[in-house]
Length: 172
Image (cartoon, rainbow, N blue to C red; front, side, top):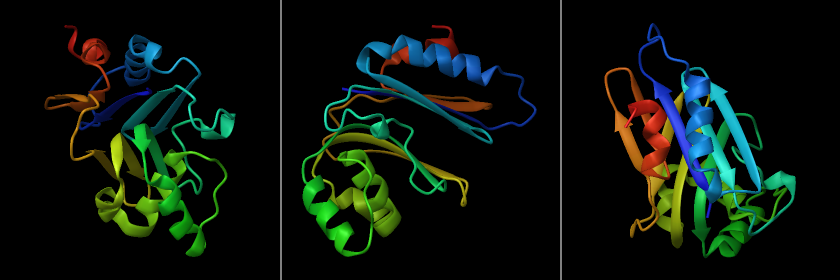
């Protein structure tokens, strides 16, 4: 189990201590990923991830993960067929630096875009940021058993793996 949190501010003039709010969100779900935590900010997008190291315990598996500085991913769950997908991507010239399904998901998105989600067999929640296109995707598998909660208002959009992770945003 891992945990995701994110804040996307919509209004550039909105006065909001986003970094502190994200750190508090991450702290509230830290039990989901006691091994590592990572953060990323890009313009109006702020992402965090807490990791339970299951597949590749090395620090290379830390998230948010990027292998080209254009795309960044945060991921929770498991892609059961990631070895098959990895083999196909390797044959297409992709290089892998970890043994994680997260890196496979990242490269699959780079190869197939949104269609990669149709290829994944598993139980997952994913967010991918494309810095060049200034686009963020948040997706879940078809069954959708892993939790993901959202908050949306005129000034920001936030998400977290647990409802209590949104407390710093909503003051629930």
